[in-house]
Amino acid sequence: MDVKNTIWSEYPKLRASLTKVQKLMKQQVGIKNEDIKSAIFDLFDAGGKMLRPAYLLMFADFTTMDNKHKIALAASVEMLHTATLIHDDIVDQADTRRGVETLSKKYNPSIAVYAGDYLFVAVFKLLAKYSFDLPNLTKNIGSIERLLGGELGQLNKHFDFEQTMDDYLQNISGKTGELFAMSSSIAPLIMKQVHLSELAYNIGMDIGIAFQIMDDYLDYASNSETLGKPVHEDIKQGIFSAPVLFALEINHEHVKALIQNEQFDEVYTFIQESGALTKTKDLAKDYTNKALRLINKLPEGDTRDNLSTITKKLLERNL
Image (tube, rainbow, N blue to C red; front, side, top):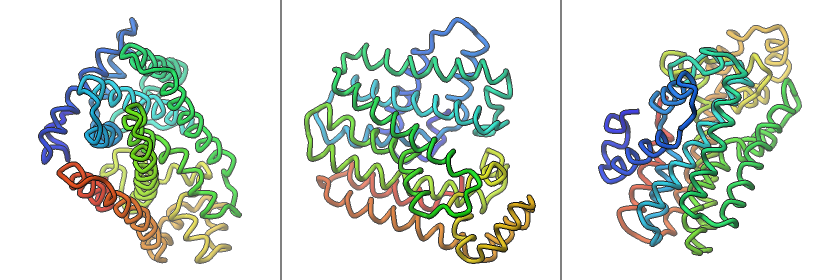
């Protein structure tokens, strides 16, 4: 990723730190297989938003943590995120990610599994290298467990036409919210700023939930070229995100019949014309506003202002 040509161009200090994060990530990839090493680097460079490390760095600015440890933590979070993406693509049998071939497509699923597993190991090697103590490693393990719980919860609801919006929100709070929450809260936790860590965790969770809802919104408001990944794949696999659940609320039997008959273009049209997308964006806005209200409780200054501005921008993004 060319950090200079992303949303971070408006934030030169943060952009410079994210460039260091990406450099450190690459330094941690010491795998001997050059093809896999290149593939992991391609995924690092393919245009990821680097949101999780950015939030980590911003919340770390409220602490006295030194810059070296901030960068290491941010790199570990982004490598963890990348590992989960590799495994997601294997499960989803996805061909593209961020506009490039997935590892499982370019090579094969077995090699992709090893690459994802390698990155998980690299995360903990990096944390150990910078002497982050055991309780903080345990915090990371707990977050990973909840992240996987969200994925499994989603898997258990495949083609479940009776699932509720609460089911969906619970799953995405694990699948996406947890990593945002961990990214936001881990630096204050390490620095033993308990109140700040708890506040940051709740802010990160609300941001992560809003982010995932917007991702699901964009699946039905965008095309593959705009989004950088195939659209409609989730519904074909029986994963019902917010737009589908709202469509089912509007006309349950009609939408259910369309899905069961694999009339996915018709489902897409119904979602766009029924108001389901408006309801989805309103839900994302609710969680964004929850996060913004909590951000206002943070100490005043440029970092708080940046957190508010960037969080608002996530609601209006188109990719």
